[in-house]
Structure formats: C-alpha cells, structure tokens
Amino acid sequence: MTPVHRQLSCYKRIFKDFVRRLAAEMAEEFKWDENWLNDGVKGWLSNRDTDPDVKALFKTYPSEDLPGLRVYTAKPEYLFAMKCRAMRVGGIETNLDIDDIKLLARAIGISNSYPKNMLQPKTRLGLEAIFSLDSFYVNTDSRQLAIEERPASVDAVHDAYVAAVAEHLARVYGLRIPEWSETHGNELREPFFAGDLQSLKGVVVAESPTAFRRRLLFVSKDALSRPRM
Image (cartoon, helix red, strand yellow):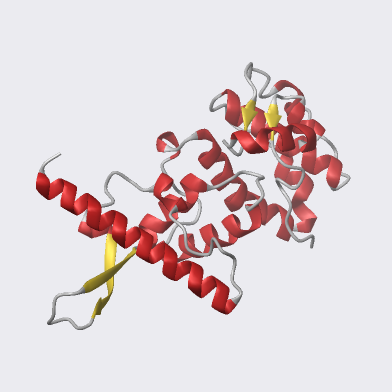
C-alpha cells in the first residue's frame, strides 16, 4: 500500500468512527434505535455506484463555493433496483418492501414491464407478486377467473411458485383450486428459500404454507398477505 493509500485509509477509518460516535450520541439523545444509521445497504450497491448518473447532489456544506461536504442521494431508478435486489419475498420486512417498491415504481413509471431475464428468481417472483396480486385482492368478483388461466412455463422455480400461489389463494379465499396447478411446476428438485438469508431458513421451513412447502418452496406464513377487501 502506498503512503497516499495508507493516509486515505486512515482518514476513512477516522471519519467512519466519528460518524458512528455521532450516530450513537444522537440515538441516545432522541431515544432512537442504536442502529438507526448503518451501512447495511452496501451489500446491494451496484458496480456503477461511482457513476455520477445514478446519484443526484442533495446539498453542499458549508456552501457551493467553498470546499467541504457534498451529500449525494441515489436517484429513484437506483433505489428501485437496490430495493428489488434486497427484497425478501415473504420475509420479515415484506410489507415495507412492497410499499417502497410500489412508490418507487410509480415515480419512475413502471407498472408490470421489467426485464425478467435479467433478474434473480427471488426478485422476479417478488415483483410479479406485487404487480399481479394487487389486482386479485381488489377485484373480488373475478378472483376465481384470475387463477384459472394456466400460465406459460418459465423455469422450475417460477412455475412452482405460480402454482403454489394459485393453490394457496384458492384455499385461503374458498375458491376452486385450478386443475393446472397440480401438473404445472413439478420440476423443482432443490429447495428454494425466498429470503436468501441463512438466519431465516429455520423460520420459513416451519412457517411455509402447505401449497409452497410441498413444492419445495419456503416462504413465511404471510408471504402473500395484503389487507383483505
């Protein structure tokens, strides 16, 4: 490591410790959670994070004309991508994830069109649940019709998931279980855990509804929960 790199590394460590100390003092003063300020988001950053096009200048301190601190915020498109990557399908933060993704989707003009082939399975399944299930819950008179049509085959995880969703919703809302759900999505051979978190696997194994568990899909008990209409 060169002297310059060592110096920058030292400054970075000192600044990080300084911010952590201030955050702890603020948490104590305002009775906030001690982890209210954290760097947990770094796991979802893009390799384009340093690209100026993905961020917007929020504020310059002390002024625009003097050297100092420049605060940047991620643009809605970047926030949407990060939120989708971090999404836990049926996980502990499901409702917050859904609200945030819906808000960001509206802000950037996304409804139900997105590059499915570029998304991880859990992200794709989560987005499909958000964009399609709302219609199911709102249109109470056409719920049976909504689950009757056999979907096109995509891949083992996707096919098993949509079949499980159809069966689960039918059982919960007293509908007729569509026949296609018994023959569609039976190719999954390895367990699929929706949250991608080792610490949650025990929880979702215990909670996963029957329609999902028997297809080797493990989600939380409220994976598809929404306010009932």
